Length: 346
Image 1 (cartoon, helix red, strand yellow):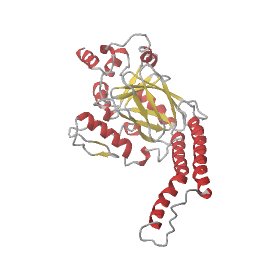
Image 2: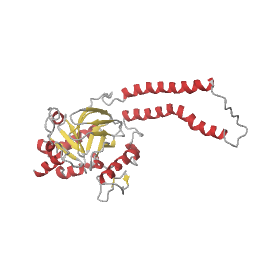
Image 3: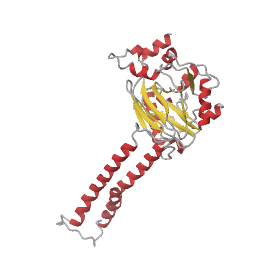
Image 4: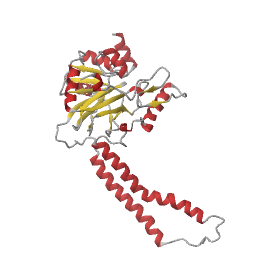
């Protein structure tokens, strides 16, 4: 399978020297105010609020069962809420117009203080709406539980996700491979993810497929997703974590089962091994583009790095290092200046 078939990251690219970043589907203007960290924070927020011009990158155009349920939930709650909101929006202007100063025909009753015809609807309707919303909340909370396995006739694909500064590491324990900048999986097959970080807390999200989950050092969270069609879907970290935050994006690529098998073979053909020494270098603060410059080979897609021969139980090792009962020293903690300096000196 060619690089074009694997499809590299196309929606978000690392920042340019002029402060902008863009891709074929996205355009983000340069922010001219504030320190660099504030510019990066606001740039990331703008992406989440405005999104890409490609509508397939949002849960408003669902591409999986989870995002479809979120989409339905949004409109259902909106319509139920409008039962209260719509009369207020319509009634207030009408009352103001009817009782305007120039309308001499309006009946003004200053001694009126109670009406059964108004009191009962004013109290019962909001109570009924609260009850209905509570029932929907209870139901959808269970249906949208990120730990809940998705029903399918195929076994889930296991992916272990590690958040680093400023990239996501995807480990495929059943295949002995790992990637940075790209997470591939077959369409119509559930993806069962376990997530942690080896640095600060981060927030994992693929909007078009639905679901958002936090990842924290020493803890393991879970997320289950599935794509109903093939395509590229933008993934990101929505938790601001420093200067490289704007570049912590990846491409979630849903492909046919045959293409996924070919993708796995292509990853295994690369000669970069994710052993202990290479992981220590990978854990240094760097963006996906910088990782590829250091580890990448010509056959790899742009800003994507493939690893094979992943050290056994790497994910469990990363989690367990925070369970020794002792604080991790700054020189051993990825993301710190001391750790970066130590790695750079070797």
